[in-house]
Structure formats: structure tokens, C-alpha cells
Length: 143
Image 1 (cartoon, rainbow, N blue to C red):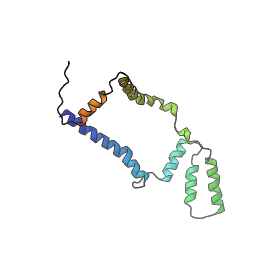
Image 2: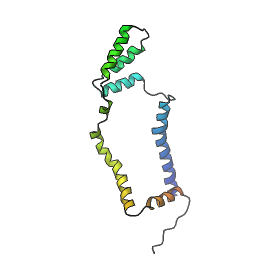
Image 3: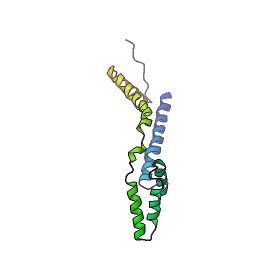
Image 4: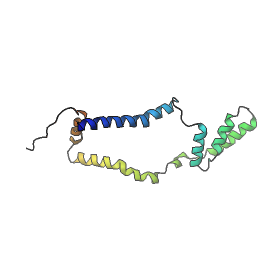
């Protein structure tokens, strides 16, 4: 009974994670579900990059204007040239994110130590017991 509960709980959690992080993202990517607007994205980018500030939002608003004029086109080109020097690599602070590297290193380290000690079947045995949750297993003999 315990293994059955463990198995189906695992399946439900994995399904929920798939829906949250993959399916919803794909729906937004292919425009099947409403995401953020270009104006909202421009505001977020402006908050992260002080040199962009409201320039991107202004370009979007000017571009929506249906009147075609040389002054409008020159204004859009000028603002676009001002934003070309923005380096988006600055958006990710690797020094700030190094603390999360430990969480990735722990499972890799455990797997490496177990493999180095020769217990390669340790993970496969427990996996088989969870997947075949309806099979009764007897403890191995001590001799």
C-alpha cells in the first residue's frame, strides 16, 4: 500500500510539474494562451536595464502610430540606435546565482560516490521496486 501511494504521488507531482513548467510555457510560446503584452515586456526590460529605461516602450508606442512620416521614422531609428549598446548578458548575475550551484552539485556528488564504491545497481533496485509497486518483494538473505 505504501509503495502504491508513493508511486501515484510521484506520477501526479511529475504531471503537475510538466504542466506548470513545460505545457503552459509552450502554450504561451505558440500564442495559444495569452502571455504578457509587448508593453509589459518593455517595462520589465526597462526596469532591469537603466540605460534602456522607457526608450523601448517609447519605440513600441511610436511604432503603433499608423501615420507614416519622416520625423516619426527618424525618431524610431534614433531610439533604436541608442539601445543597440545594451548587453543582455548583464541581466544574469552569475555571482549571485553561485549559491544555487550547491543544489545541483549534491546529487551529482552522491551519484559519483555511489558509482565509485561499486554500488551501480543501488538506484536501479529501488527504481524497480517503485515502478513494480504491486509486486511483493521479500528481503534478501543475509548469507
